[in-house]
Amino acid sequence: MKIEALKPVEFGVLIQVDEVDDKSSGGLFLPETAIEREQLSHDRVTLISKSDMAFDDWQGTIPKIGEKVIFKKYAGTVIQHKEDRKIIGKYRLCKDKDIVAVIREE
Image (cartoon, rainbow, N blue to C red; front, side):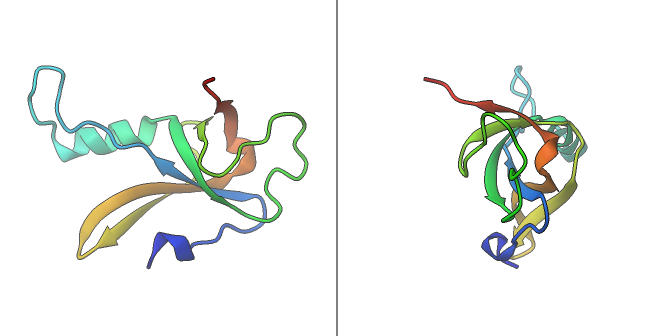
């Protein structure tokens, strides 16, 4: 499945989890379980796609596709995008209400 084929429904949004460094600050490689745990708790992501109904009832700042946002930790369903059995991206499907801030650096 190509990630572009995934279209959220109702008030859903698709966010891409930023990659986490696989080395510690001291240069040691981290075990995969530690990397996965860090990615699950990561709260800064990129908005990739949204449903037609997402953000309809929002007041104020509405996130745009491609913007960095902060969302509720552990919200949504984790989706791993694989090609040739190798994970090439981690995403989450969640609700628009799980986004708590938009990061707009001027």
